Length: 309
Image 1 (cartoon, rainbow, N blue to C red):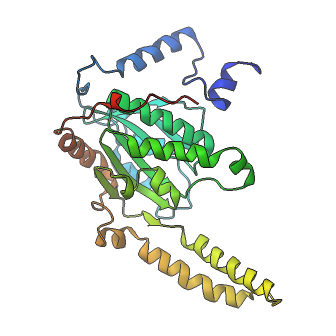
Image 2: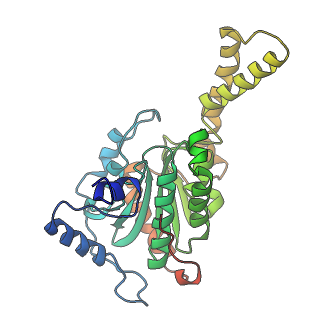
Image 3: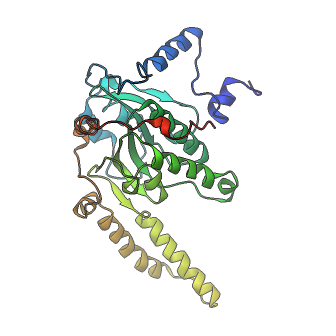
């Protein structure tokens, strides 16, 4: 197992896409994977009968908090928008801060990317491969954004976060299939771009009422200003800021970020296509998929192949 075992290649190297505990589970998994493939080369999309989710979409009100610091598993959202709450997850054990996989919404197949934390090199690599697989199969992409950005730090820079993040952004920007984005929580910094923000031309981009968008969160912006001020004082041989001075800077910065990053402010500036009721997300997506797929799909084979890890 330590040299070439399933745990190594499913969780660490990313060479394997799926893990099965038995032959029976493996065969069932293969059936699901093959069932997700297009019926033939010329098929536009493989539709399935519409199923209501096994979990009530109204439960989303109790799962996602207005306090963006409260964690939750993004699979709980997927379970309440996908037909039958069925979700074929891709590389479940690898890059766990980004959940990827296939589902159907009102019968339409979609490839879903949802945040479960900040983006690391492994999650960016997984996203790249997944996006390109969907593009080759002509499957629309759905991004569920709740992202503070990419991981930072010297060890992550040395580990290739810049080049791997670039691969993900490249895949998002060159994907030819329809893309849809729902900001379900935070949308800050470069994470906004990587998860198909406005600049990467999603067909539709919506926000939930609790969502926040900006270059960075208010607390982070205030911390940056405080650090810059303290650095300037240090160079001038002056004392660092007092607690009162810190609060004097922090409060208005955080207040401004909360106001201007608010979903209602965003939609008033036409930065999105509207605020949607979380419980109606599934129905809104179904209508949007139907509208977008009236236009012919470009051939994903016009581009390059699928990058492995």
